[in-house]
Amino acid sequence: MKWEGRRRSSNVEDRRGQRVGGSGGGGFNPMLIGPLLKILFSKTGLIIVGVIIAISVLTGTNPLTFLGNFMGGGQQGFTTETNYTPSAEEDRLAAFSETILADTEDVWNKVLDNYREPTLVLFSGQVSSACGMASSATGPFYCPGDEKLYIDLSFFKEMEMKLNAPGDFAQAYVIAHEVGHHIQKISGITAEMDKLRGQVSEKEYNQFSVRLELQADFLAGVWANHSQKSIGWMEKGDLAEALNAANAIGDDRLQKQATGRVTPDSFTHGTSAQRMKWFKKGFETGDINQGDTFNTNDL
Ligand SMILES: [Zn+2]
Image (cartoon, rainbow, N blue to C red):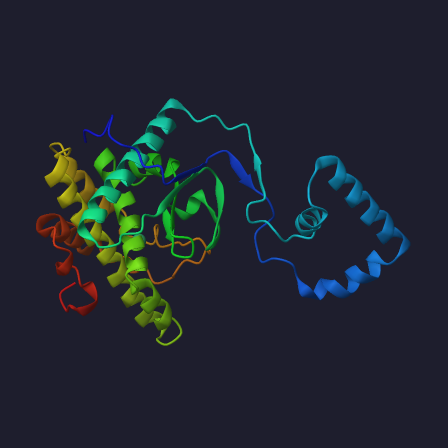
């Protein structure tokens, strides 16, 4: 792909090197209120409150924020910097991802009315999202709750080394697939899926999940079609790279969402053949109307 020097998206949060505080889980446990009040009004409690206020004054933090963090709430955004220095290779991957995201913006702003651009969050190790905590092991994911794509760039290395899916266009396909999920969010498809959860059996839900994933693959293909038509940056072998990646990641890897919940049914993304088929269909037609994976008997 001839991507260097092109526009990079500004809808990017670079959170690499940030460690998320707290050990995951929910916020403040209401069961603790009783015992806490008892402690607060004891002698020791008064001393603790005094210490907290003193620290707050000294460090300039709101005592309530401090207390919140102390009691296990407020992990969201409670981050510390580690001495993380990205390698030249990682910075190149970051620039690449920002460039691909920018092009998905260009394409979808043209194809869709009132397209709302998503944000790309780059992280290393672990990250806190509106969908919960996630680690690199989760793989790239899209969180509908905050309309952000989360990627630990080490995934691209893994695609190359462990999944045998190398190549920049394979990486672009992964980003475009997550953007596909964003389009499903803003067009209301994700909400329809949420309604289904709990109404149908897990097995049936997984079948819908396959359709959702194949549609995201299709949308990635539609992006590639328009992108190539307008700037012609694909090179020989690029399409094969994307198809190879679609083939390689036909497992639950990308499905493992931020909640950490992995659907045990192995066919949550569709088979490799199905993934390749729908990406290809999007790439060949470039027509968003050809991608109704929910109303076809021919997946
Ligand atoms: Zn997906």
